[in-house]
Image (cartoon, rainbow, N blue to C red; front, side, top):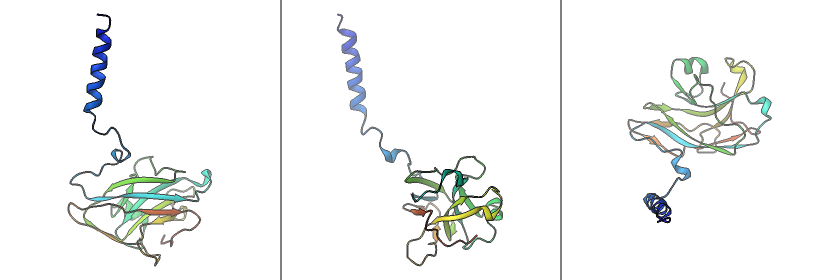
Length: 170
């Protein structure tokens, strides 16, 4: 009789374990949403600057390259910012890579960029620089993407090397 509670506990643990198909895996963290337009990929970082020079870091999808006025395009919604600009969140500092998923409306986006705020004035274009861009060829120009209805593009990977910056359009 004294072994009955232990037997019940063992049976419950056994049933729980056999019900688990595969447990948690790294891919569970960033699942691609169903019926959503957008992009996903990995941002790979090299040569991080000192902590005191990192103010903000965001991924921005611009419809036109080069952007004419980055703040106006962000405010009027023609540029999409991840994480959203109305949050205090930003891309993670001092990691080797970061996965991302961003919802985008159907349209052509000519410039997918990781932007780094290094200056004090968040609303000054002189405080920001491009540190990485989506680029699939060696001509140093960004590669545009086209999002159509119910299109989700994967592997929109961006290399960021703080010591080897891409062209600076703003």
